[in-house]
Length: 330
Image (tube, rainbow, N blue to C red; front, side, top):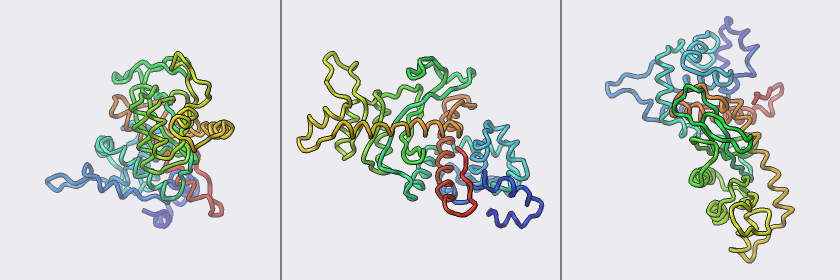
């Protein structure tokens, strides 16, 4: 349902004056009809269709996450607000069962939905030549029995929850991610998320902190033509090398023609703050404190937050030129 059609209803004219540049703007340039392609949203074998269509419900969840509203009951209450369900394209307010069922089904495909939105960002040219990889803590409620007590070496404190490893680029855009049991990503996770990111686009640089001083990670990136830049961690050996970045040794070992000045590596590595900015923006979209209980529900909230961040970035890109356009927060 377009804003033009809705404006024909005088009862909500005032509503548009207030929020035209907020939540509804998120739906102005993006289509979510691809959700209907997933088998999980198909009609039942008996031919029974859904009470509400997946695109409208997905818009509803994006709206709620944007407004820091989480949980089936709070989301249902918000979507029963006349202005909200009209703005999200519903024909009538969704029931609690409809909201619950949609989220349950969405959990099966949420990572694929995220990947579809990443491709939409890539088609708009929003991905630049520098990728950053980093992990963050995902705090959970004490009542979540699937979460665990983890140590965050950056904050030097313990926390209860999960973790998430994210590859980001451009204007705070997440392009690959994996939900993990703790903040500290394993080598397997680092490799998997890196491959997922390279499947979207091949950058020139891939930046990571000293946790990514991993030989296989470096060699894989170099073999694909990407320069990895991660600080050398001398604690990994009893005979440390006289280098600042692991790539210095890998290039010297495997190539006689390639040379990189340390000043260039230093300048490039300074861009790694992009990863922290992206994670901060994603936390503002719901990646921070989880309201869901259980690993499956928690993973869904994490990827919904990443989806919202992508939608915000795409919306801001599309609205950058028109006179009077307003940048969406986050």
